[in-house]
Amino acid sequence: MRIPARGKSKDDVLAAVESFRAQDVPWRGGKLFAYVYDAGRDVEEVGKRAYTAYLSENGLDVTAFPSLLKMENDVIAMARAHLRGGDDVVGSFTSGGTESIILACKTARDFMMETRGITAPEMVFPTTAHAAFHKAAHYLGIKVVTVDVDPGTFRAVPQAMAAAINANTVLMVGSAPSYAHGVIDPIRELAAVAAQKGLPFHVDGCIGGFVLPYFKRLGQDVEDFDFSVPGVWSISMDLHKYAYCPKGASVVLYKDKDYRRHQIFACSQWTGYTMVNPTVQSSRTGGPVAAAWAVMNFLGEDGYLRLAEGLLSATRRVVEGLGSIAGLRVLGKPAMCLVAFAADGASVFHLADEMKERGWHIHPQMAFGSSPQNLHLTVQPSNVPHVDALLKDLQLATDAARALESGAGEQMAAFIRQKLEENPGPAALNELMGMVGASGDGGLPGRMAVINEILNALPRHLSEVMVREFVNMMFTPTR
Ligand SMILES: *Cc1c(COP(=O)(O)O)cnc(C)c1O
Image (cartoon, rainbow, N blue to C red; front, side):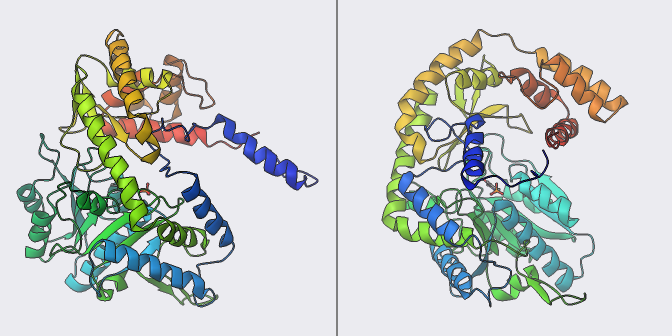
């Protein structure tokens, strides 16, 4: 594509943009268990109107746009009270969980380098911590030390975490809950270990921080994970997940301003304006913060509790229903509304394909450490009315998957591995795409079982090589 020689009409370009959607995964029907946290048309409308109202304003300089400062301070105040933070707790509004996590890691790194003279920073987290911590470590030059979790509960083991700490450790992390299994790490014990060693401790509440307090009020047994726990230095919590705000909305909270200071970047050593940024972005739209302010005030505690009630009862029915399908097995004890389940005697990859044939989008998770390959459900409000239909189709899909051959991908993986070891470039990817009958332009086959089996069977660093090659190929400018 080229910039057209003559501009097109407003109607034409907007109609074209709308038409592109036809290829996307349909997210409104309640059959998608990822990507979109759909609390209905009213919430969506409030978010979108507030977002577009502030789309042009720039958060680069809140002295020029005090409206954005006010809304951010309000949102952080609501988040702080929700997580039982006292008057000292402060925070920042960020673009998402990944940015909140990168900032929490940067703050810990700089605090420890400046106050303790550490020069080769490391951080300690369980294997169940979100991939964003690996990304943060990669971006920030921090060494990763991961620790195995309990193979039955998938929760971090405090003694094992303690044993991984050394003189270079700048941060320890726990999740509330983890994304993969939806279980809460023993935050109180972990924070005590960190406190005893004088270490910052971060709670990743990206997915659960917002909804867990509501589950607790509804009578669910939820272990404390917030600022009421001694030794918690920072918490990340996404608003674009279970607070149902438009995407581009998360918060990172810190125990006090002395600690948050290490997050802020300032630069006056160039020829332009004196730059000072609390977060990663510099120029940034005011849309997400206005939308978050609007949605949180629109839903209120009563709205969030009503939505949480639906999630809680739907998840209980899902867990119970999975238990009554022969061969399926829930991993760990889900603390919230994220459920991972394995299949015995059937391939989960075929099962995902069979569910897709029936209109459901459910993600497979690869085997790692003590966690077997499994399927993951992020139960969100639009799924709630469809639980019975989901369970019925899961039964049928499990029967269908059991009848299918599997293992072809494992043999291919051995071949791909050899190819990759000879030449770690795009050649192995082309080989793989040819083997599974995918087109060279990034079009994936409808059934993904063989590709998933290959990725599951490859050594982890080689599956990373493959998906990087794939993405490097996908993002090719149109001709
Ligand atoms: C979603 C998630 C993240 C990352 O958040 P993004 O908004 O996707 O960047 C981090 N931790 C957990 C537990 C999550 O579920």
